[in-house]
Structure formats: C-alpha cells, structure tokens
Image (cartoon, rainbow, N blue to C red; front, side, top):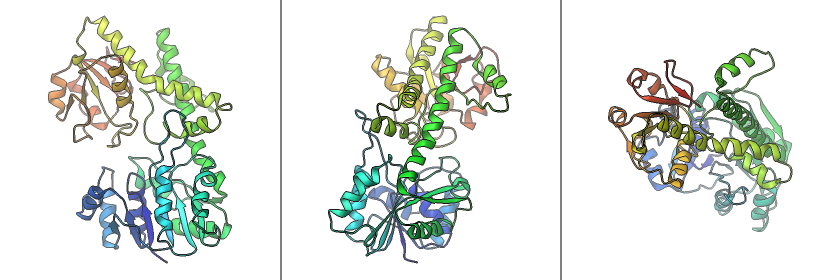
Length: 408
C-alpha cells in the first residue's frame, strides 16, 4: 500500500494518523503550523489526551513521518478545521479547499481524497468537485472522492477511534470498500459504506440530535428556576421511565462539533430548521443565564465587586485541554459586553494564560475570590471540594453534594 498522507494534525488528524501508523500503515502527517511540526518531531505531543503519548511513541517506532510538506502519493486524508461563517451560519470551506488544491498539485493519478473534516450536506458537490474539475481532473478516473467523517471526542479519542462505528461515503462502491479496508486496520466496529451526501448528512445530524436534547435539558433548567423547582430531581425521576433519557443541563455547549454543526443546517435550510435554530438559541443563551445567576448571588450577599467572582474551567468539557467554543469563553464575552471586567479564571488543564485575570495556581485563585462558579466538572475540582465549602458556589455541573450551593 502507498503511504497515507494525513493533512491537518490537530485534535482529529493527529490521533488518526498515529492510529494508522500504530496499525502498520505507512503514514506521513502534514501540517502548515511549523511550531506544531517541530514539536512533534521533537517528541512532544501538542495536546493532552489519555494514552496519546504512548500511541505517539508506537507510531514513531513504526516510522510515522511529520512534515509541513504534502507528499506525492495516492491516498490523502483531510482533517482540517471547518468553521462556520458567523453572519450566514454557512460552512466556511476555505481550509478544505486549500488542502484539496495543494493535493492536486502533486498527487498521483487515481488518487483517493478522503475528507474527514465535518462538512455540511452537499459540500462535496458545491465546493470540492468544482475545484477538481477546473484543473482538468476527471472524478472517478483521476481522482476518487470519499467522505469519512470523524466520530471521536476529546477525552476518549483512542477508545472511540477503535470502537466507534464509522461511515464511508463514496461515489464508487469499490473505492468505498477499499477505504473501509484501510480504516479496518484499527477500527473494530461496524464500518458502513454509503454515498457521499448521506455520509455528510449523517455526521451533521448526529451532532444536531445531541444539541437538541441538550437544549431540552437547558430549557427545563430555566423553567425550574422560575418556580424554584429542582431540575436535577425532576430529571432523575423522569428518567425512571424506560423510554425517557433526559440529559443534564449545563452552562452552554462548546467544542467544534455540537456547537457548530447544527448551524450548517440552519444556514443551508433556513426555512426548514425551526426546531434546530431554537435549540441553538437556547444553548447559546446559557452563558447569559449563568451571568444572571451570578448577579442574583451577588445581590443576595451584597457583593458589588465582580473581581470577587471566579470561574473554574476554561475548556468545553471535563478533563481535556480543548477550549474551542467553550461556554466559559462565551460567558467572558457576555461579561465584556456588559462592561463586567476583572472576573478571575482558573483551569488546571490550561497551562498558559489565554484570558485576562487567569490564574495558573489553584490556591491563589481560591484565595482571591468569594463566589466560585463551576463551569467544568474536571476531576481536579471534585478532588478539591473541601477547599471550596466556605465559598459561595454556583455549581452549573451539579457535582457539589454539600449544602448552600447554588445551581442553574
């Protein structure tokens, strides 16, 4: 088999490349971030993930190469970011298009281009095929297109790479089966081969489904707050029903999947996505809801100085260092809009200062605040609950079991 060139060595591309290499596939990982490439070539993985360093060592021993350059081969996996345009809510395909064009400059004939990046339904037809055709390539002869959307989450990446089912969307069944065999080198779960558009839609639908269910829990939290009901007790008892599984509310939705992918559908089908749009608005409103709860606590206790408030957690989920679209960053934006400056921040997984008034030492952070807002349920805070019992605590993650704690 020819070498596989994985383009983009971020949260998805790096573990994917390493997993292929560990499984005996010859892999070259490419990224245009020179610092990232240098770090990896010096043996330093660029983000924290359980088991990632061990996987990296295995991949290195199997000969993985890391470079800033694309290589001439016939199998490419594109795992670059796919943001959305804030104004229109549509996919911004610029990184995917750039990667495709760079591949077309050097690839061998009959190359397979596998797009792992999440893209909106129809993006392959709208953005990728025209780029290929205008260069004179014949799709299906010179270039074969495949969409194999990633399906992993930070904090559990390695397990999910091996055990989550995968979808392979291809124009040609034979090519689809070839790519399925490639992914079977490490994926032990079912791998479904379908058409490209179905693969595009299925990935976006998965994350939209989760966004809607989270929105229902968050709306319940708001309803219960109005009439002083315990939303957690209500969810607990409702979930006793065998066909009910309500999720837990939280301070917002972050990450590069659930908080982004539903917007692709809203942007492309604005007249047909009323429920999806409402869910997005509910989840995006939660940081403002948290801000309102902070205000209530400050008023109740006569605290007028916002610098006495501390936000625990900058990442979008527990026990990872991924802060993309995090609810805490969204909350800090809301505070900035309301001229509420000086709130303190701490996260044990963020080792460098990202925001103003960020502490890198937990003891110093706790000693400087009167109100602690738990935004992320890291194991770290669960192990230090004894240190916060004397504080006013707004627990947005429902992890505190002591009295006099404020909830959503």
